[in-house]
Image (tube, rainbow, N blue to C red):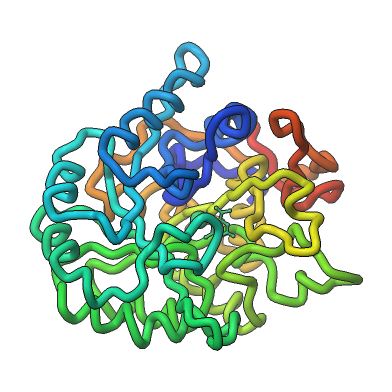
Length: 344
Ligand code: DOR
Ligand code: ZN
């Protein structure tokens, strides 16, 4: 297969930032995605209905005339979140979920929550109002090995939550391990987003020829056996629980090239093309549409998009960097080739 036409895809996990950074990265996403769940980890976090609406309007105001791109907003779950806020969020036309960050687990997660145990009233309200819980599934205890954080979180926090609130819709964001795949496959009303980097790279990519800050994200890249399990999960015919979420997370070059570099990989410039590469690598391009364009809307209870995009097997070289407001941004595959291209 050298060309493939799929229904217009959506990105179910995206960081768009704000201000000049938002203006710089938004064009990359809207060139191929019709909708995106826009992550709320701004400073300060998007934790109130009014801030989500302001952020929504801000994104909309930057769209070129005629764009039908739709930002889908999510609220940052903080210790101050109340059941009343959940009810208001569920009733709001632009809010589609609530994002749980274990405090300290990742970029701008300081406002997140310590333990899930004290949040039963919030989860009960989310279950009652059928609002999706989007989880950054990593244990945040300082002594937990970074490569085990997802598995530990699933075992100690997510499993008890899943059992206690069986009707709550849960998305385990950016799944990276066999533990995540097994968990998602075992439970109804449970799904996962999967990033391009976790399908294409294993943890060796962090150290290939030297330290590679542009391959550093959280959850961190894992062993090859985990990458293979993820690729198998997303390409299995009939699977409906895994869908596209890039976790494209831009940081200024200076913050990546640092003694204490930020976590986050920018992939929006070549997102669907990189997924095509991953699916092509196991001769499963026929499953790309299900993962990219069908499973996400089905889980979120939204219609599928009516348009389409066409991808062609054709190599192009990714720029060394892109402008990023007054800074620069190094994309995934910088100065290297991507082997698929959007042609229509
Ligand atoms: O690598 C990451 N970057 N993981 C996250 O969870 C957050 C993100 C960011 O906002 O930069
Ligand atoms: Zn993210």
